[in-house]
Image 1 (spheres, rainbow, N blue to C red):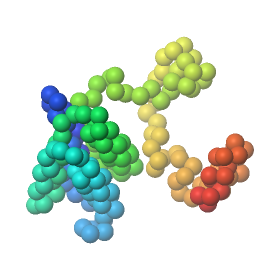
Image 2 (cartoon, helix red, strand yellow; image 1 turned 180 degrees about the vertical axis):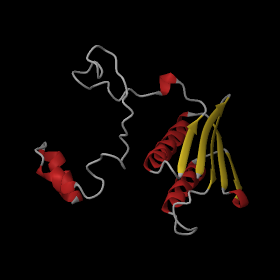
Image 3 (tube, rainbow, N blue to C red; image 1 turned 90 degrees about the horizontal axis):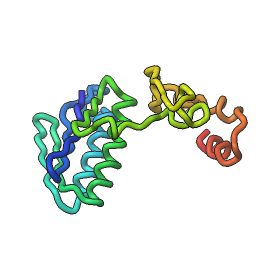
Length: 163
């Protein structure tokens, strides 16, 4: 399993990826390739910072000082890594050591009239998974059902092009 950890200390940000996904044999593992591509993109895109690698441990750590540009780059890459962890939970684990409740997104904010899932300004999670690998109409060739569903013209056009 690849463990990815994001942390902040003072004005420094750290993103660490270590391990192997074991999704496929070495050299054929698309999950490892995705994590590697995202981490290397971050490392090469930063104007300043430190990159530490240890090939014998499949380890890469990217460290940079917080700033508008570096924050945006870290956020973009961590968003991709979170999507990978959601899609491949047995192969990628993402930990945000700096997260708190203020960082959480209420996915039910606009449900049932915009006041939360309970209709009274509160919401309760039922443990559903909204990751691309679960329940998405774009997963497992379900585009035929999607294109048969009445949609606004733009969304229908996108669905047809994807088919």
